[in-house]
View: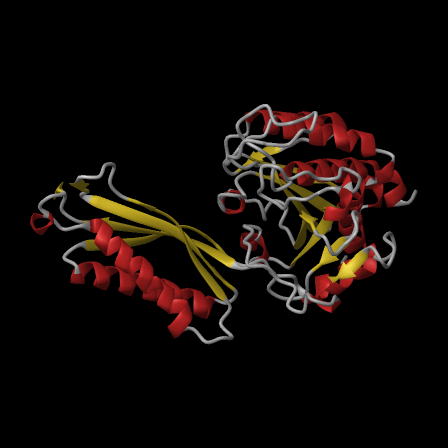
Length: 401
């Protein structure tokens, strides 16, 4: 078999074409008509029979032989950000692929082509997961509930994410550690019900803004006074709303935020204390509080055995300086992120591995990080990501019959 990296490099122009088409037509959440149509068209042209999965997802399967099944995943959704770059393929929509999901999808399309061309060498099957709604922490769960991990039953899987990292070179492949590598995420909402009225007569009212303010301050004490220094967690309130003019006390108000944790005990404790603080503080001020956690996802976990296998397989196609164990790199002792990723829904059910492909750094002119309207990515490593996807799947199936 011709070297997988060499094969992948030969389709680099196709991968760039995929990326730019997806980037120009950025779509969000599960509303991905152009993105899904393009991905399906490309898969069908390669000889696949893609099927819908979940709300907006696509699944295709490579492999002629029966055996174990390895999953490789890319997310397809963008962010509701107006792009501020000067790229010639700048987004034509009010959305932007500022998190690189266009890169991920292009890499997986490249892997799909490589797997189809090497299908006779597959000792089992590879399931391709094109996922919507990662940014809203919904897509993976939706696909799982629709049978993603069944028919054929999936045994292990992986995902790739791109990174802008000023400490690494473009094209480096980074692997965090064999353990929890991302925080769980719980989106938080607190609704306050008061009694509105004239701003000149507050004694006739129950001010929900006062209650909201006291709750906001009280929540800060959870991290400062109720968690151990070793309990790594982040509680952020991102928005507070109530009222629409100066001389009226509103009837209601609300705040929203997120909780990030690395273990479920801390996670459950924080959620419990938020509810207690919100309800009791509001009650003390004659208002009522209702706490909800509308969106959540668990942590992503790198399986120890799969972690070791990943280095073994890809060390053969990548130079040693390019494949980096971040847990052994200076300044990255913990090698985990407080960011969240809904691939956690997959990794709590099967062994998984996650890696990052570096697509930008400051010395090469990439001055902004993910989720910024001015972020740009180098397209050079697209073929590297495609090769790592395909090679990991091929080698895992070969070594896990």
